[in-house]
Image (cartoon, rainbow, N blue to C red; front, side):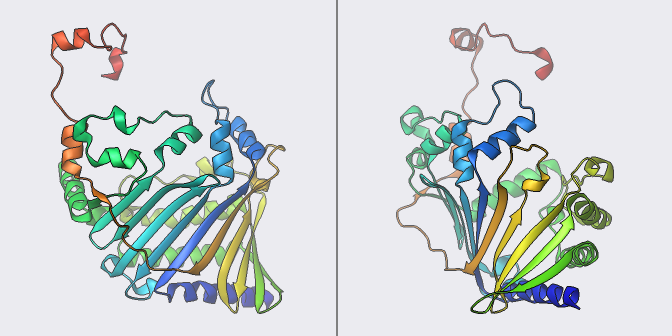
Length: 336
């Protein structure tokens, strides 16, 4: 009886999320630098490709916030119903990347210098760019830039036509989405064990436990029959690909406040074969979303000018190539 009750409570909590017109998710990786470095070492990186300490520090304290606003309940919304969307990646040192879609415009702001330091990849400064880089200079200075959604869609459509296929071919239709959700629900009902525990002030915890390999193998078995309806390029792993995945039991703790889902905590440390990985979890917090707004003073980024002027340009002739820094370098012939 408890199994049925807990599962229904969780189902209802997710349904309530779909009934909202605005919603925010905050993802927080609950880990530390030592655990991330141990995970990286377990993957046996090539010499010089090890995770930089700065990157491990940034990831251990990073949060990702996603906000969406629609004219209709989210469950009933189509692409045209969404009036605003925002994504922000933050670190202990501040916001790294912020991305908003408001109406017909996309707005982006990036802390390129901090990103370069944390990833160990040098990023050019605005002064390093040619004049035709335009708004890209502002982007490297950490200022807001914007570009047209319609312009981006036109460029994307032209690329699809050049390679065959259309936007419809590469998106999930509503019927396929419903079949997929129903299939996944059946696997969860079959493989996951639920349990409830009461709390204070209308708070309740629902824990869901399942063996990891058994669960993901079952999930992909349900998805494969729908593969023909999935966007091209989505390659699904086979049972053979998943056979080495740990079958350790993983537990997710769902926090419900007055029947509404407010937080999910998943402990992933048990999946790591390395005993040095002592702290590895994922926390997702849900809250009422506030409508994303267009930032003031954003510089327009012309995609055609950017691709044609900055990345394009006339090719070098033989004399210019001979005088360039590229001359005399050995390039593997089989790469061309």
